Length: 590
Image (cartoon, rainbow, N blue to C red):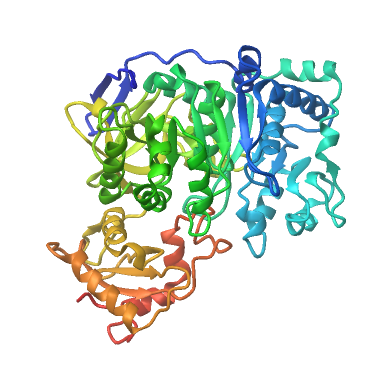
């Protein structure tokens, strides 16, 4: 049985607010996340826990649960002797790796909050502005980077002064403590004293999210938040605990999808995580394909872009397809809606290999602030775009905003706020203490909330034309992205207080913007508008942006999603050109 039962109690207030709560009880959960590791270190010490590929080595390097627990305890003892705390936490600059995870588990064990930082903030950013902001906000006592030479620029900025730097691979230009020094351990008594102070509401880590502001906010994440969310998943997805999960996963631990949701399922259920050294971009997807040829996952989790790049490989490579689907129970996507054609393609490929027992296609919805899953898919064969129903323990409030229902959340997996940002914290909750998400949803079946919801865009991204007509930006964006496909990297919907809807187009990297390209866009825009009417739905014009979105300017997140409002504000002059009917660069639909 893949899915647990969900029954949703629904009540409606006089003002139209809808309240939802699942009647099934939330399963019990431990007080501390590291308790899962130590359980499996006793129950299955020889089982492979983490595996990675290392430069110059063949195959997979790995640690077992027993080995990881031993390393974690030794490092935790070394950390407990240092002047580290929530006021002087640990910052991790480098990406997914065994050392990274062992260090973070050791920090948990010593009761020291840690913050995994997006690698882009150190290696992609030109001014390191977001990293500098985070260092000022957290004031960390220890900073870790796997390779001091690779991260030298970030490790030598003035804001690093006075902090202990720990590295796996040294650099002559960076004064650092070798990671091996931590492995020598420390006082068992000091560690025991530190462990006694850790409870379910102790801070586990800080996860940074930018949202529409472009300024990273440190989401306070407690042990209760992560463990309660894993307990919710245990109820909705009981298959995860029947067989230890096997994951091949690239999603970064600096984000809640990879760091909480995916890693959490592995460590809670005694599974194995193969750290994918590939990424869903051309030139890197080949590494993912190689890894999936070698390892048969039981659940495969990715963003839609990852599935989009993987699907052609699955279609043409019989050996890959056979191994990919051999043990697979679930394909899971999140972060954006999976396009209809891609859903159908994956369904067909799965049916080709497993006609009698195809894997389920699932999704969920949530935020960094909800640790992350607040709605979860709970049935096989759910509709395309179904993001699930509330799991046990969650209380959902749907608030009417215009013709949309904004979703707000309360539960043990919801954050208490943002670290050292009291105003942002105050603004994040309503008068009843519900977290204000800014997202809107639609019922799949208004008579039965247990059948789930569909995402209905960001309420803060919608705007009105001069006619007063509201533009549902997410719906137009989805139509445009699906129709334009490989012609664009992404698009931004424009613009408030104008007479019609326009499109700001980011072309793919390396694409020549010439008359032929503009002609293709013109034709595609005509197809987008076919059968569509109304000023709030028809795309009347477009303009190509020659400057790519800027991470440093807050136009793009390290996950690759666009900050539409920030782009429109920063590029106001281009918005004005878009609505200048005499500008020769404005593209009109064919």
